[in-house]
Length: 311
Image 1 (cartoon, rainbow, N blue to C red):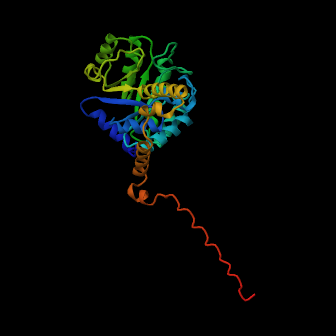
Image 2 (image 1 turned 45 degrees about the vertical axis):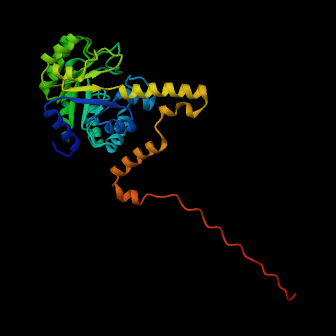
Image 3 (image 1 turned 30 degrees about the vertical axis):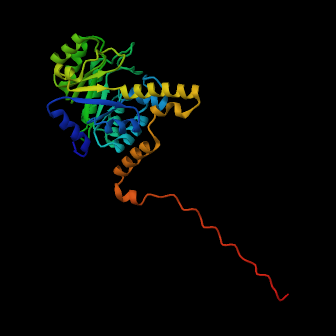
């Protein structure tokens, strides 16, 4: 395995350090930049959020590898912290999984999550989920682990419907070499305690406002044995809430001033975008050579006609 993925190395170092990791979910490049600006040490690219924001679809397996890898590349280039990418169920069979690994490595992902759901998949906190037979998923996971050409981490996720099955599968994932495991949709404090005690290795807990899992604090979850607390949707939900309210008020009032307190001012937003752009493209040198508004052309001097007085 070649080690030419600096952000993957950074993420591995984070896993090796004591203490926990808070991992928020983005849904596009701008939200990823804002999450980094807020001080989070890594960012998660949410398949749920991408389906909603990029395609206007529910999370039912309609997003393709091409769309995921393109967005991952754009996000990874725009931030300076590790990016963890939701790769759904690998977009097909074992051959598709191998291609997924290579595409996400090329995009700059520090880690990818590979789940064991059948196609079409569902959100981990939704009803009507179904998983592949364990041995079928293990072939996909083993292909993903073997296909890596960088130090990109693989997070193996199960959506098993019973605790016993989830614990069995997560144990198999860890034994096969998965860097991190995730049992999604845990429904109770007792389930959290049991996973923390019985599943070896680094574990993720996925919290969703309005979802199945109790919303404990990150300190409580780390103490229960979860290395990573994944906040997969609050950026998406808070942005949607703010836009619902502000745009309704704008439509009713028909006055931009009515929502000015809810908006980032033009200059502040412009400064944020420009500073981030110039920082990742060379800093001050490009800033100095950035095009400026052209001066208006000097009007031509009108010609003066001198009358011929000798006429």
